Length: 148
Image: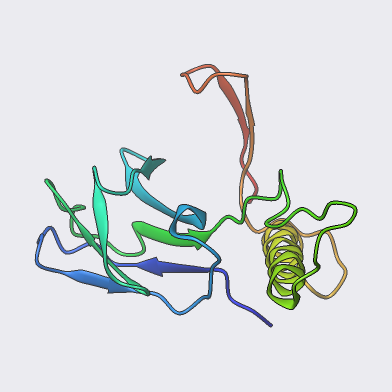
């Protein structure tokens, strides 16, 4: 099974780098979140973090606080548009076909992991986390069903 996310422990140290092992198509598909005051906050490349190589990030400005699993690095493949588009009379390149299939594969893997996080893999519908109903904007008005 493919892993499309990693949880990391914050160290409060800007020198700390955070490696991850999942493949991605472009750096914009890598999502970095930090748990701050009980909520996941999405960070921005080149503002909050940078890539030190293809599979390692380093925070800029302020480091995430020390904590256990308070950093989440995940893949969120853009599935709104195809990586390559084909037109009548144009050449079909194998690289473009492979890119489209890879995009589809990554989107499927991500959807599967999200579903497995919500439901157990044995087919039961036992929840392993809370259910949060959020409005169209991220604000303090939300309903949380705590699963115990």
